[in-house]
Length: 68
Image (cartoon, rainbow, N blue to C red; front, side):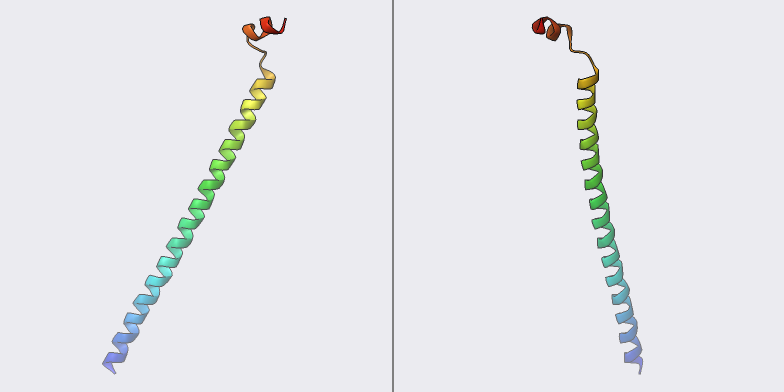
């Protein structure tokens, strides 16, 4: 009877450990996904701002002379 209780407690501890490991892996995957998405958005915003500034700002004086 005592052996059964010890095995049961040990299995419970192992079960909790497995759940913790799965939860930790899920969190790490989620954080990696969010980080990747933020990097992609950041690159897109940077590209958008670069293109916008190229359209909005007038050409430099040397470029204007070349165009004339």
